[in-house]
Image 1 (cartoon, rainbow, N blue to C red):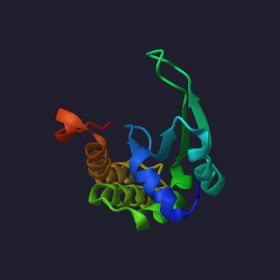
Image 2 (image 1 turned 180 degrees about the vertical axis):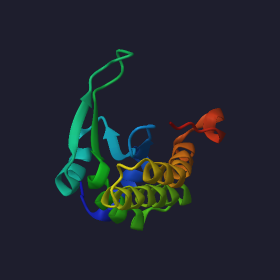
Image 3 (image 1 turned 60 degrees about the horizontal axis):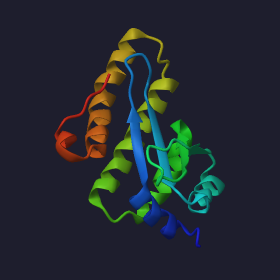
Length: 151
């Protein structure tokens, strides 16, 4: 198995996700993750980008196997997104990566500017909530794909 950036980007496009969690009282969190039943396929992400690997051992059926999930969040998510997106082939995944990087840049700017004032918090939320909503919409599948919630 290869752990070249090209291989990792292809694996991530099929088995990975960029998710957004946005709460009213926080700046929100971007997380990247990739999961598979074969731990050796997610370990290159841990070695290259850090983060952690979790195991989901819950079995809803006797046929289900353990799932190994690499994840990396907040500021640590910027490097994998920046590197992997260069090799994404789907427009949807490229847009998800762009939104995540925009959110992280706004968050960083907001934190450095002294986020503790009410006005700055409202200004930040007005800029970032539409980005979170679009990212969440891109992550939805099926009939719910047109509707996203935040806050």
